[in-house]
Image 1: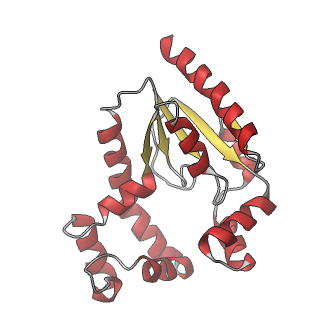
Image 2: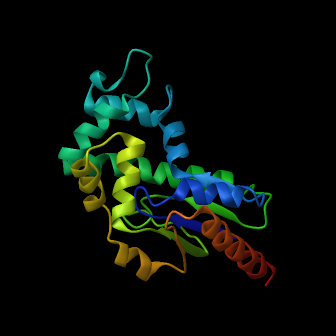
Amino acid sequence: MYIGLSGGIGSGKTTVTGCFVKHNIDIYDADEMARLAVAPGQPALTEIIQHFGHEIINEQGTLHRQKLRDIIFYAPEQKLWLENLLHPIIRDMMFATAKHTTSPYCLLVVPLLFESKIKYPVNRILIIDTSLELQLERTQKRDGLSRQQAQNIVDQQVSRRYRRHHADDIIENNGNLDNLKQQVEKLHAYYLKLNQN
């Protein structure tokens, strides 16, 4: 059984997946797959270099992520080009590895599950939700961004209301780790039960 896990930036996806890992649940992360997809020697990196030029590569021959981020943040057409290239590759990589899962169900962590035009054939969608204020605080602290930079990123993502409306399951992440663990515990038991049917 595939559970698609998503949530806005700073919602606590990493913390939640860590809780599921403690239950021996396999996790497949789109961000990790994206790093593998653009590793040196990969066809996607070659296409990115051809499109953006060699200045998009750092001295070690790897993708200069900050330069690429800066380009696509202010050029929607470049962002769309990059997404059209990478999202199908990432999805295919995730399912190619997830089909070998050994846990009763697995989590496919896709931060842009709703923003991506690529569909993920998952059995359920789990959303990690938090208040806008906590989202901004966490993003600023984690990424060293100004409040406005964090807000700009949030503004480019789908709304909390949209995510909640399209979710099968929701974890409320209000910053209380014990409460978060309890919610994961309940969902874990629920997913195990669903998987038996």
